[in-house]
Length: 420
Image (cartoon, rainbow, N blue to C red; front, top):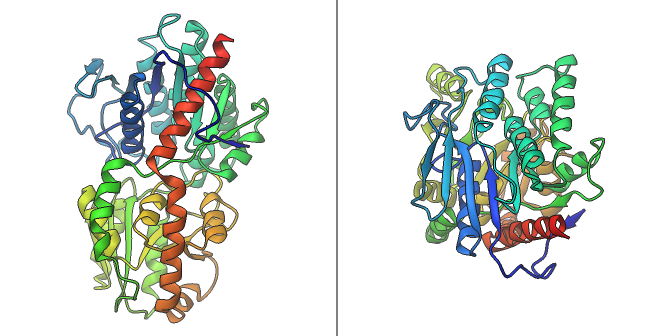
């Protein structure tokens, strides 16, 4: 496994021409913010960037712009071209049939425009959408352009973990399709050591799969820095818990809420979310009327930074079995704000390993009887301060400059190999 460093290679003198294929892009949240920040950073460094993406829809799973359809639009106000393609947006993201149509529609929509030979020096495609990776493979073959596959999530495994596809013959078929698509790319990377190790097990994987972690994007980093003066190193009473982000099948957040409710612990749990299972959580809270819980939609970045600064713990939940398919990007803002993590996850998954190796908070097993009650009983401000210090130390690994350095160097390496 190789992690790029700033001194790995000399950059080319002429600007690289890069095609970036993603499903989500600003103003979409989650990966959309990160991918846009990467494009901004590469553009600031003089690279010629062209983005192919969908119209905004995530994590609400709705046509946020009102423009989703057959028309291909082009935006140039960022200094580079953002080319938006329509796709089928599932009414029920947990339906396997609708998710397959969603994947296929993006692939077919992208196919309407294939780059010509020598248009780009490299193609960078982000997975979890296999449709995007499949398009990049076709574009590479027809234009003779090398592809970098950046695996943020393993689609087939994540579908099984989230309950979209059962662990059966259907999952096996999805994995074979996924792996066949991946093999069309010559350069692979992922965002955590366990993910890299998983990719290496795929038949036909490159001999070297690279580790290129995500980072804290610039606008949220600014707000977190401004809110940091609110941070305290003593526990609130009641203990303040925060969850913010996507609420889907992989997170299993409702199950965690049910476990919390059964305790007599003194806590205040604020949930800020959106996603396919968010309505279930909202309905559950309305039904139980437990004053220890409050639920809201996703906030803007400024208010997220404030909520992180005021929280004692940031909650990250992963459904059992989901831990080897992805590493949650929400971990990074938590570290930057020095907010320890309360994680319910597999011990050997990316999040579990990160928690244990760097002491970022408390990791609990789903099936450990009495674990949540014991967590609250054993809390003390000395331990909290230690976890806060560990979070601050680990956050330096996820800085923006390092992240964009690694990506620029990977693109330079790929384009250099293609011309040598």
